[in-house]
Length: 141
Image (cartoon, rainbow, N blue to C red; front, side):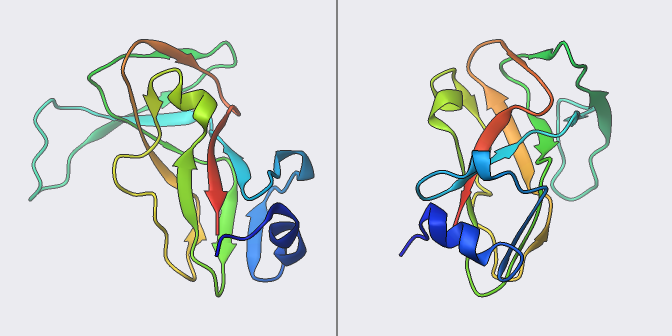
């Protein structure tokens, strides 16, 4: 069973923490999370699964930044989340999907007890301009 919006709100500051929490971002059965103002990109085109891969930090300015196809961008949510007794799951918003942007490659399923910011594995089909603080994905339980 997926929790309803009212049930998510009832559990805020109990078994679900979303900080900062804005009731305007609550949906019928999810909560919209926003994009932080930094991205990481890998420094090399060839990534090695057996060694740490170096990254470069990119600040997203208020006027936005263009993302290009064929590149993976690592972002994170603006909101810090914690869950106890429920499994958090993350999906891109349909409005983001209609622009040809993906917010995770395979990591949309969280663990009971997860505490932290969500890493977003962002890729695009076509060039897209993004901005800090955009509502980029939904968390549901």
